[in-house]
Length: 204
Image (cartoon, rainbow, N blue to C red; front, top):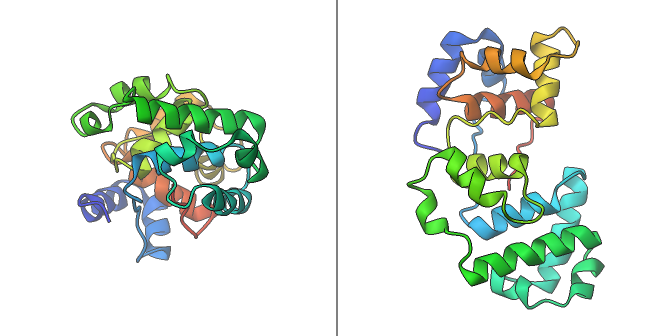
């Protein structure tokens, strides 16, 4: 559990009755990190545009190709083996590019702890297959940044429609305005809104 989690929960419960209610339904779970930058980004790439169940299946098959799931191992894997694990051709290329960049030192994970969110996003989106959403998931799930608002996330948008929009579409500007009350804990608010749709936490 992040060090700020309980403080964030108390602040959000005071400010937003909807999120406070969701918290009471999920009292003993919290955001967790797997602790490995390459694996977090690789999982995010694997999970793009497919279900959690399908992503877990592909990841399990990838573990047969790369038992340690380290960048150097993926960078040396045969392309055909990545495809055989269930990756699309494009995702296999993305994963290979990510591994190559880690091996070449083109990414700088040792510096990320001291960088602001937008600077990290700017660095990560230079990698093929990593857009803003994937970078935001990395900020939340690996670096445990407390104030990320992933406006392009379908789960967040759906939860806002359900809880604040009466089931109607809520435009991004309105979500951004709503989320002002959640700052500086918008990652925590987002995580609990996800739980209102799916009680089992996803881990990257």
